[in-house]
Length: 189
Image (cartoon, rainbow, N blue to C red; front, side):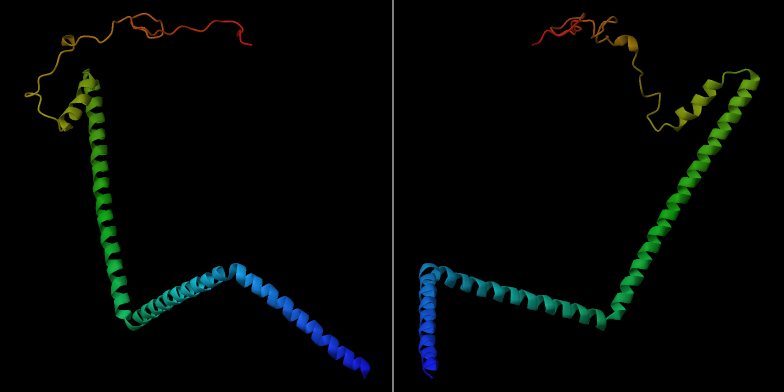
């Protein structure tokens, strides 16, 4: 029994010592960092509240979208029909452009074939075939008519440099001239 009494008296001493240690440690921690802990808790509370409000609004929007999609299937069908009609219209326009392009290519092929036939005929007659090949190209050009345009003569122009100018020779004026480097080993150290 005596041992039981000693154990009981020893146990409260350990508990009181542990409580004192806890009190001193927590007290010094709160004394040192108390304001920081308080402001951190307040900031954490505000952030959690803001996130909760945003999360609730996001859930509400998702529910509204789900209800709108489930309630109005006619709108979805109309959108799909409009989309299909727009695609069909674009495809028809594309097909029309392709047909125009094919027709244009056929006309060009026909024109080339006709030119080759004319060229062959002119060669058989002994005429020059180059003159015949140039006429259709001049007719097709959408430029101004030849009667209103006065052609410039090349003799009116003054040449920019002399006929013997070569920039690599160093002749022809200017302070800069190119000279080839010395042959032989480099003399660097």
